[in-house]
Image 1 (spheres, rainbow, N blue to C red):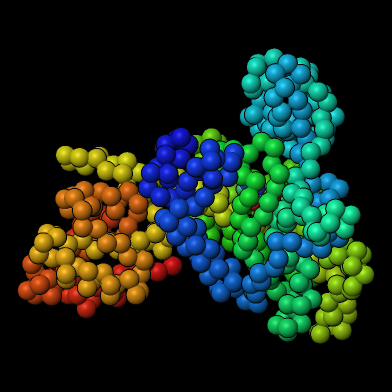
Image 2 (tube, rainbow, N blue to C red):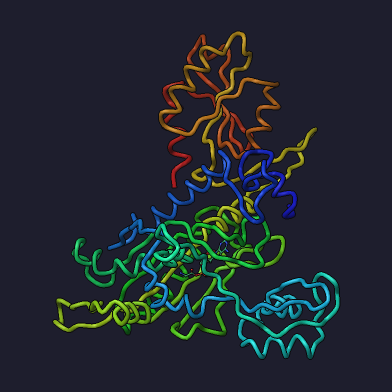
Length: 452
Ligand code: GAP
């Protein structure tokens, strides 16, 4: 499955549509359709279960997208959240210098270089422009990724505010609120699912890099000295999370950072093997006491924690585990999509984890004329418990194929035996095997197989 095919698959089956399509689209924006929205929400639920519900002392917040501008000064985003850009003097194409070096060397060498090293390397190796093939670039300029907007009505009272480029700051500024109201003892964690915005100059690869995206971020506040153990725990916990979503472990790997941000002690990405190469889907970072120290400095509000056992105060360290939700959806779809040869046929099948599947069951009357009423009755009952599809058009074979392609876990056929004996057949998407069940057994049977 290549990227072009995935884009078409998502559009044709109602997973993801181009943004503002009837106006010709807005570059690199995408809208989740009815099935994509289901997958996305199911991944959120899976994350919530693993990171909030099943963890000790973990709390979810839902902070604002718009925050006080000083937050972004304290975090360092206003001064240094930027990409190193160069322009081709021949064709005017604008590219990221670090990506150019990475692609040329087939490594992440560019990530560890500063602006001067980047342009020197590009010039020494005469790296060609991806558009015109010549090698004649400007010096590197840093391009801010912050999305600016303004508040206030009149021009002279307007002030600049930013759409948040990450969720994390909403968790840091609520450290004290959560600690106090939840009577939380360190180590404890604050997680959040929400939108983030970045003025990416070279977005692309479908939903992999966009200007508006969603993150599932999780910050664990801990005592210095316990930080590396917690960091290693969450690095592995992140990997296990993606495996638990049904992703093939061969398509996942760690990428430990060589160049660390000035505040970071340890950092590692989890990467997925996309058709365009390995791409980051998660980051685990040991951020030390940088974040809370900076907020203490900029807000003048103490961020110290009073240790009730030792009666001493300290600024906690933060271990961050951040998952890109849109990238998780994309990885799950790539991993699940299969084209299979059958005896006399082929089928497209989305072997997605049952918990993530948009529909758990499709109810199909064998012959519309005879079985529709009963099928509708079964459908109306099952949809109280599961996302249920109802499909009465075309042959049973065609309806199976349609539901296989969108990952529907079971197809339930209503036929004469249902009318006469109260039994139905349930066909499994993956094995294509059928079982016969009494109607009253169906709910428990499905429930058991779609849980997470
Ligand atoms: N708070 C830390 C932070 O934001 P990051 O590595 O910049 O770290 C975290 O972003 C995750 O967000 C990434 O691992 C990736 O999955 C996702 N992400 C980042 N930029 C993105 C973009 N432009 N489009 C889609 N997802 C993105």
